[in-house]
Image (cartoon, rainbow, N blue to C red; front, side, top):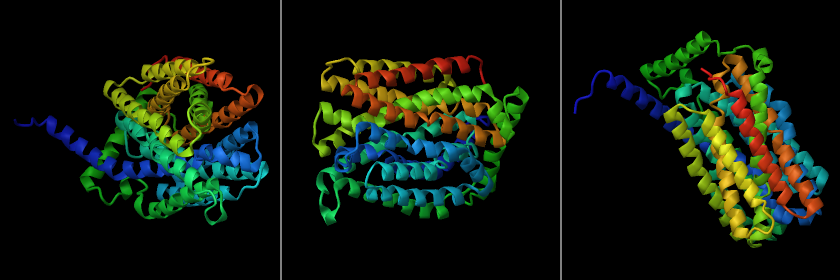
Amino acid sequence: MSVSPSQAPEESEAAVYRKVTWRLMPYLFLCYILAYVDRVNVGFAKLQMQQDLGMSDTAFGVGAGIFFIGYFFFEVPANIMLRKIGARRWLGPIMMVWGVVSACTMLVKGEASFYAVRFVLGIVESGFFPGVILYLTFWYTGKHRSKMVAAFMSAIPVSGLVAGPISGWIMGRMTGAAGLQSWQWLFLMEGVPSLLMGLVTLCFLPDSPLKAKWLSDGERDLVLRRLDEEEQAKRQAGAGSHRLADAFRSPAVWLFCLVYFGLTGGNYGIGFWLPQVMKDTLTKDPVMIGWLYAIPSAVAVAAMLWMGKHSDETGERRWHFAVACIVGCCAFAVSAIPGIPGIAGFAALIVANACILAGFAVFWSLPTALLSGTAAAAGIAWINSVGNLAGFLGPSLVGEIRDRTHSMTLALLALSAFMLMSCLVALYVTRRKTA
């Protein structure tokens, strides 16, 4: 069957984007797995660390969440720095330092040192995730972006799929080795890979299509031309904001902060506490907990990839996001039913976790349609900064409720409310079509 002239350019363009994707996305994906493991492995460490250090559930929740306070203060300047000095020289050193800081969690002696290390880890890691979201806008137009963000963020559930069994094995087998507790080995063994990948990043990652030596001149021109066409379309539609101040003056940016706040609260509220929930309701064996932890991760991978692909194919974002949030809200509510069998509650949390991550797959295609230039760098970082404050509130709230009620019921209902809020605000802020 012959190919018409109109089909040939489309196939050529698809081949260029496939080449870009296979060069960049697997590497960024692996880096985010390491980042997310270093961020949430404290949930596994809690199974023994909390008792060794004599911390309450409230203290653990505050320590787990204080990561996001440091994250909040430094995320916007970090993204502006990435735009100034380039992704390679910014993301590589960030990875090396957070690997060292994460490994240093093995040295904490009590609440104060635990809080300090988590706060510093948040500062160091604050430039990575929003930096990558911004970096993707240097390569992909909105046509491809939701699928690429979904592929990148599927590292969140894959990190659980990979690190769950590994963390469970470390917690179950390494106690007493070389005089260290198993939770100390956990932080050490899972921090070193980030340090090594940071060194590789300095050599591997191109700052932009202009510096990608593995693209031909024609391929480079095509990528840059498509990006320029999208920028022109934004300007003509009046949707593109370019100056730094535009990001903070936009009511939509602030509402997107609230949407992301609810989604993140649900994500980290359950992410930091799921190993403890499984210990309370299913099994006390750390190795078994690690394998069970992989189940919601596997389901979430499939949900994220399907959601990102389907949203790109249909061009619809608003209802994809809203439906994911409302189903997640209902699943959290079901898991909170008093007396629900452990396996049924776990199944409901699998659904809730999958819906949260499916929502993440679509979310970033919404605000990036509104902002360009420096405003995009600041706006993406600001939404992520404010939204991630829920990463402090969610785990802290769960810990406080557990200490007061000795139950997860009210905590799970609070996470359900987070998801409902995200759904309603997202429907409001996206009621008019963006470009």
